[in-house]
Amino acid sequence: MSKLTTDVLILGSGVAGLTLAIKTARKLPDHKIMVLTKTDEGESNTRYAQGGVAAVWDLDKDNFEKHIADTLDAGDGLCKEDVVRIVVEEGPERVRELIGWGAHFDKEKNQDAYDLAREGGHSEHRILHFKDLTGWEIQRTLMEEAKKHPNIQVLEHYFALDFITQHHLGRMVIRVTPGIECYGCYALNKKNNAIDTILSRVTVCCTGGGGQVYKATTNPVIATGDGVAMTYRAKGRVENMEFMQFHPTSLYNPAGENPSFLVSEAVRGHGGILKSAEGEEFMQHYDERLSLAPRDIVARAIDSEMKKRGTDCMYLDCRHIGEKDFIEHFPTIHAKCLKIGVNPAKDMIPVVPACHYMCGGIMVDAMGRSSIQRLYAAGECSSTGLHGANRLASNSLLEALVFAHRIAQEIPEKINDWQLQNNVPDWNAEGTMEPKEMVLITQSMKELKEVMSYYVGIVRSNQRLKRALDRLYLLYQETEELYQTTSISPQLMELRNLITIAYLITRSAAHRRESRGLHFTTDYPEQLDFKEFSVL
Ligand code: FAD
Ligand code: SIN
Picture 1 (cartoon, rainbow, N blue to C red):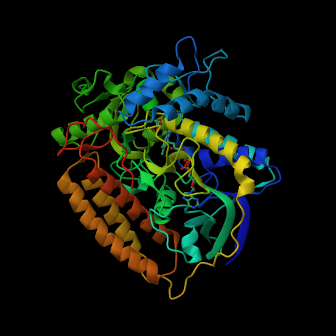
Picture 2: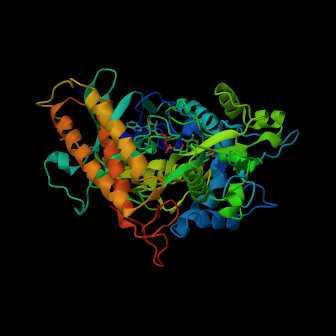
Picture 3: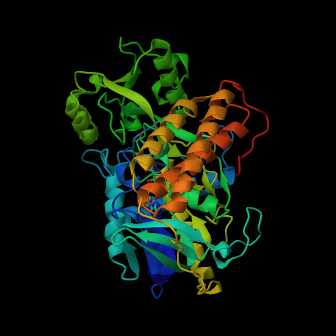
């Protein structure tokens, strides 16, 4: 057990965490910036982003008002308009900075102009991308840029367990306690299994999403909602968790794989058309924007068609695009399809919805401040109000860039107000033993994913939600017992965190007595007139 100290502690090394680290390191060259990441530095949701980053770029055709209107429309009445305006208007400058650090985006053939793609819900072509590997390119750029700053220290294979607050100093902290403060976190050093106390003047949570709470997800296995669960345990506010976004088109692989491979929405933006196995189009029955309607509508349409027809998947027809063109734009998707025996030039691509993005999360204001003092949040773990009830495609990377910048503006102004809290006790592991049976954890994880997939998926009902809550309670009790008696492992902590995420999704879904955006319930198929966030 060691005690480590830093000025700024950042949890996560995806687009939000690394952008923030770079910007803060520049502004505070004499201060220490520590980045914790639970596996390798390069492993994140960011790394797998395909479609790209949305930004108003071609001013001859596009403008801020159009991007704002598209975001508000996708968000189905629940976006915070001031936040939408901030992100859309500040976004292009943040993307230019990324380009300045060396990020490559595809250009039109023989021209200087960027090749702007279009995705569902966008009225214009405004997605900057690097083939179908945009996230990989962004992650690479940020990792290289971060290495140029000697005051950034990245600790890999360090698993953050809990935020440290007054609770750890022996005071009573409940959800309505005013002035809760964060003094850093406890973290498991996976290299030596020690639980270290990391004290910081300010902490920023950039731990990404929690798609692993469902059986089928495009999110890598690190996406277990840790930061959201930690914030909730620390009695911070979490909101809008019922809005889990299902991407309409993950590749249907009968062999099953975790994560599910994404077939980017950019493929539909490039002309791909959704069809049934018989080759019939069906989107005209759901939305006039057809295959390019916002994600909630397309995912529900596919789900409904699959249920009606009793099939395991629907299809994306790209045969008319031309093999050379398809390979040029989507080399990774092409290679993956061939690997499972599908040739996009000759065969329709089998697709199925999969959990993709967490629209809700740690409640933050327009500067990224959470309800806990000295704790900020950015990226997918945060709920800024940008996405409302449904995120517009490719707005996530943009949001992370904009909020990382905003937080990096504020921290230097305030850092001298915050001092290290020195009387924090070490982690107490008394009375715990090595787990004897990993099956207790792995089987509960399977059960959890089944419960969420069957009862809290794309279509919900009161009865399904009640059943889910009952099952979750049982899993919660069993897991808490394990947690009290066995020593900490990443697997146990991820299970515990995912149970919290599942509970937050299901509770928020049960509270929302209407259908809106990504939340659809057969008991309340209509929208209510008043619009509110669900805060837990
Ligand atoms: P992440 O990139 O997920 O990073 C989270 C970091 O936190 C990781 O480093 C992880 O190790 C670390 N971490 C987590 N828990 C802990 C812990 N307990 N202790 C220590 N470290 C921890 N969005 C777009 O805008 N455009 C796209 O084209 C796009 N395509 C996508 C394609 C796929 C397949 C997926 C999965 C997502 C896509 N998204 C896209 C969404 C977008 O990629 C993510 O929302 C975004 O990258 C999240 O960035 P982040 O920095 O918040 O989190
Ligand atoms: C995709 O490429 O379809 C994903 C884009 C996103 O999640 O924003």
